[in-house]
Length: 144
Image (tube, rainbow, N blue to C red; front, side, top):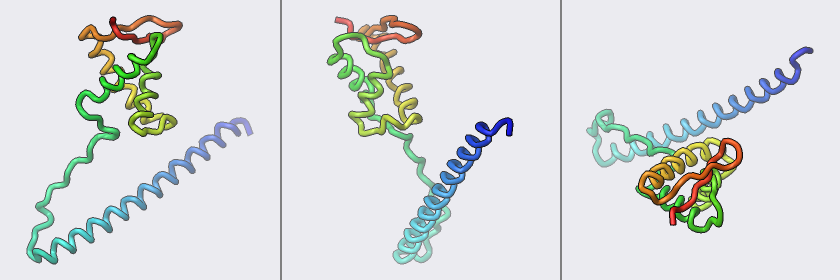
């Protein structure tokens, strides 16, 4: 077969996605069951409650940080660094400090975007500056 490796990888990927769908459906069933239990409890206290009028609350963003938390992580990492460090280095330190799995690529990308934004703001304020490193990377250091 000409594309045996590609087909094998696609079949494996399809299996992964199908497993994720099954897990999501199981989680959804749990949420529906929990909602039914809460609805039944509400009806015990108020049989005439109009549950359809209750608005759903938005889910908070994934790995939400408190105001200024990312800048604090950046400053802490820059303070202990003895040479310019990349945003990825700072991201991994922030993940460790926040208990986020550094092997989760989606989480690392999200936290790195937030770290980069915090570094940019620190640079605008004159607290940190970027230094060109080898290749396409740039390092960051505190302005002393």
